[in-house]
Length: 125
Image 1 (cartoon, rainbow, N blue to C red):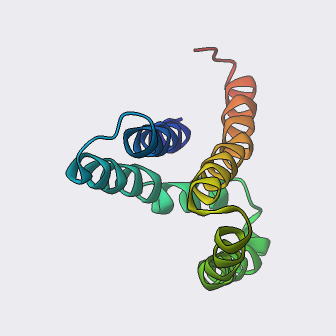
Image 2: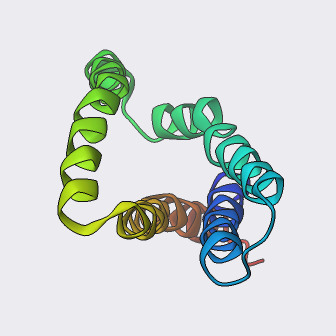
């Protein structure tokens, strides 16, 4: 649950960062601080997320999923290229909103896994 919560906090920091720049015209250090917080919250759960994934994958398939995770790390360069195209077409702020939306969507599988675990354990919190 902490992984999804941290990703949601990261998304909230992203929204705050956008609004601090566009609506509230805060000093640049505020926007930069929010960016560092967003990055910290969003990326701090990578190892935990991988551990949860491996807990839910049969042992004989873990190598395949670990390799897929490695490919996922290389996707950063592809997403940077896509981000450049989006910025050129729609602007930087649209790119930030789009990124935040994708990050929120990425928490859905985590939440479903946690819900499945609670049902199997017979716990509800």
